[in-house]
Length: 501
Ligand code: BES
Ligand code: MN
Ligand code: ZN
Image (tube, rainbow, N blue to C red; front, side, top):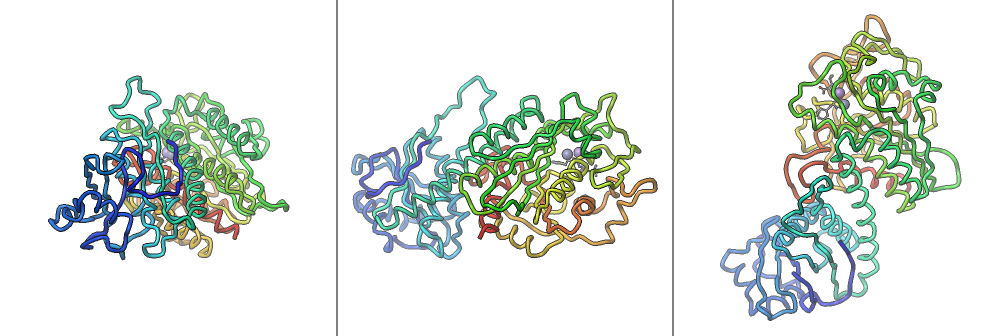
């Protein structure tokens, strides 16, 4: 899809469909001269639809009007943006995405839009352009790589953001550019998460990382099994020993300033398939466990977007990548492992593997001198029980960093809710034979998992995001489609940009 910002009048634009909007409960578009021009050319067809109550402007409502040769574009699409005072950037994103999918369904592949939402509330032209760009790219995302038959619709070829206000062109241009970079990162994450586990092994993840390093000028380190052994990553290797695929410990570095300090480390769980290991999972829906590397994919994608946006900050993306499988050499319940920071862990369930590989990855980030750490993991089914798939769960030892993460999420339309941590929960992960055990009882599972991770953080400001329920979706919603969502890539990019200020 080619996306461009162009000066001109939307009514006069030659394209497949021109996309305008209507706010719920408003009688006419007195404020919007551009829509008025279209309405007049169509002999008030649109305002009549409004008067008759057929066009209400409800959020995501889409009305298509044929222009019958009265305008250069054969169709006008009017998308409802809901009530003006309730408008948010995320509503713009959702509504435009729905409109793009509808037009694609009608085999309209050239679209021109006004800067939807710009000027309403506190939405700037730049933010609107970014949101619209994200909507067009993310809302029409498909993963058809392994399908031999074509879809029954094509692809949107051209998407133009048209303005008659020349002074807003630079801001629109910048917003569009940023939207493209960020969407590309989200799409990379979705592709990696949707990819079957036989196409996205730890080795494949390391190859993706190498390509990203190459194209965006990132430093890369990939540790092999022997090097992990030397570094004492016993928890990571305990998980990896049940798989024939060699584990990879991937670290990407972005340097946005002269000094060498590491301002923030993004650590992502990279289990490329989670069978549960010897504590094997039920087979129903086990295929979904190909997505257990969503955290890892999201930090790799986020740092490559950061490398293109070039903020003055130093960032690392750290991904312990391995399969969790039950072969003859697999670790067993009752085994004791020693993590990189020297703590010993009794394995109760080999299916609580995410916290094991993260134990070493967090200790590694601490050892690298990270001043702040954010980890992202499809860590527990319990987080879905607690929050459903609306909010990502957050845990932290540092309210300031946490509030920045939550704010970065809100800006992205990726909802994040804090859950508590408390020393009481530590009791549940005390072992009779080692420093820790890797599971608690069946209650507060997402919290005991976070409490376990905290053992490997020391005093470093830290936020843990449990994305087990939000990284994949079983329904189409706004700019997110079925399958991988790409959450929380946009949050991470926003966070890094905010931390750089
Ligand atoms: N990868 C799973 C968590 C998960 C579940 C992600 C559903 C996405 C969807 C994780 O490794 C796991 O198996 N967690 C266990 C922990 C338990 C053994 C303490 C779980 O949630 O059941
Ligand atoms: Mn598991
Ligand atoms: Zn897992």
